Amino acid sequence: MRVLFVCLGNICRSPTAEGVLRHKLREAGLADQVEVASAGTGDWHVGSAPDKRSQAAAKRRGYDLSAQRAQQVTRADFATYDLILAMDNSNLRNLMDLQPPKCKAELDLFLRRYPSQVEEVPDPYNDSEHGFEHVLDLIERASDLLVIELKERL
View 1 (cartoon, rainbow, N blue to C red):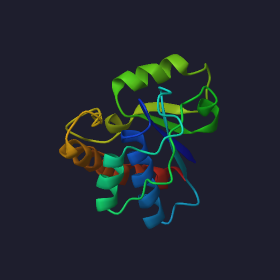
View 2: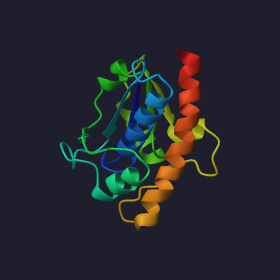
View 3: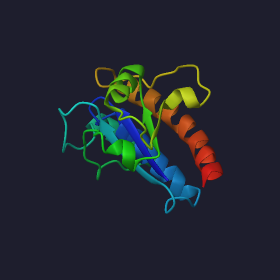
View 4: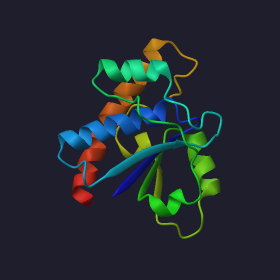
């Protein structure tokens, strides 16, 4: 099983989701059964490490994002991944425009799949430190539920 998280630049939300899910999969004993990655719909940060504020917030909770590097989503990803989860509606629309017909991947909005008071993971890039903590709160809760879903699929 392969999961791809997607946001705009692949330096805040999607790498955080990748790091959190990888950690939770290891804890659940599923790390060898599920491949996790992240990408951005834009190309501005390709090759860059996650935002320092994302890394710091994640590190405070025991997640290490330091080895990740930003990449841009491609049409080939729709054949590679089983599940592609967008962080917000704008990126979901961009993915739908890129999605080839009859592709393998299931495409959805990350938080829509899991009960939450909000549908989108907000972009914390222009926010305070609190914004990065809020993003982690949302991603952690949704990732717990995603692990349960993945267990059922395997």
